[in-house]
View 1: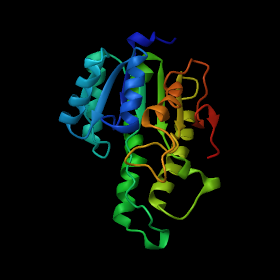
View 2 (view 1 turned 90 degrees about the horizontal axis):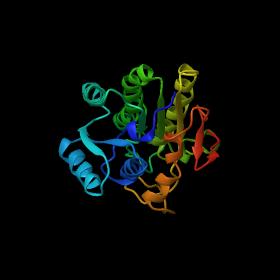
View 3 (view 1 turned 180 degrees about the horizontal axis):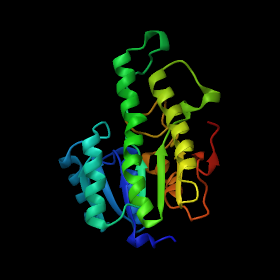
Length: 237
């Protein structure tokens, strides 16, 4: 059975700026207590303080998605403090192989990209899902990209593209694992937003991009799971 929004707790990775911050603010504006995370505690707490100054419920925690111990601490401390973790938004990502091709790939960059974009989300879900199961409720939103679509796959920035395609596959696999447990798992692409990760010319602000994805973090119990979306529309994976 779903809890009321005012009692729910959400964690957003990489939420001290950009789309992550817009998602955190949007969830807090809808009544959730939001755990803002960043690679440094100072950055996370600074952003959480800004949200609290707006009258929103927020706390800051250090979280480096490439560090298993950091992921464990962030989720465990949140669960200990609040007794629950209802919403996980996996927003943390890197785009560090721009304009490279597969035959020019730097494998250290490839590994670093996958460590954040795929394995980072995987680590967070592995820690969060058991907490969600305890309360019979969970919503997971993985932030993906149009560049991860197999039907539109190109050869430039291959590590970023393929890591996002793998994240889409992970989304569907996890949704299948938790089917019937009231834990709904979906991915969404923000499209071209004005952030540091933007590829090409931005067509919208980070706030506008977040608005198109927030619904997936607030789904009713009969909502979709295992989907890949852009706005309200399914995105061909």
